[in-house]
Length: 317
Ligand SMILES: [Ca+2]
Image 1 (cartoon, rainbow, N blue to C red):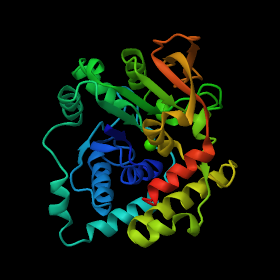
Image 2: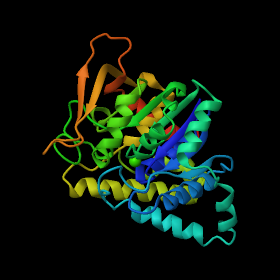
Image 3: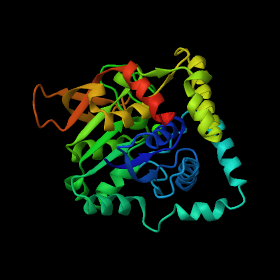
């Protein structure tokens, strides 16, 4: 399964990236990074660091979009950056990090890479998107043919029935760049939307015994995983949302490999870009049994199975 991972490389994105190393079927061709809170090159550097620690020396990383198409960048919550930047600073201390870093870079832009890879493998590429959709939207605007050669796009974003997580109706990735989301959802007809309806039901609570194999195999990555999950849990507590971390981005990755984890509803999805109070809302119009509906919206999930597959992948069992 040939995969391009488009991400803002924050907490749960990193968990997804780590999982790719523990799923044999996934061939990760590249990681394109949106610049959430720091420039995209820094998020791409963090991706390279994680790949390096996982022993993956072949996947290239790319700087994607720096900010939304029209709007001011959204900061979002910064708690999970603390363990990530601690890991980044630790890796930068490595004597030969700058030359290792160079080996993960490539002269192509993120948009060129996505376009050329889709042309090289027509009908074979899955795009996994777990951040604002700005980089993908820009690639579609620059190379409209992408939409014909891509196999499918799995998006962590949006919500159909559930309350949003940045406003009562909007989910963070879509809200961060609704114009970009509108481009992607209106031009592509092979989208799976893995939104809050299912990701908020797929929860994990950190305990050492869940990650014993990872701790043995790779203490540095284990420390990072522990830091990400525990800092996310602390934020959930602060917001009165329980004590567990929702596995938003890891679930989207798992749906790429195990689509049977979710039950989906064929829909047309419109993105609210003009609403005074509803910006970023994903308006899902039910298409009944319509076989050619442009979007499959996940509405139910086997969360127990998903969590167990997540732990299996992250522990590389
Ligand atoms: Ca993300």
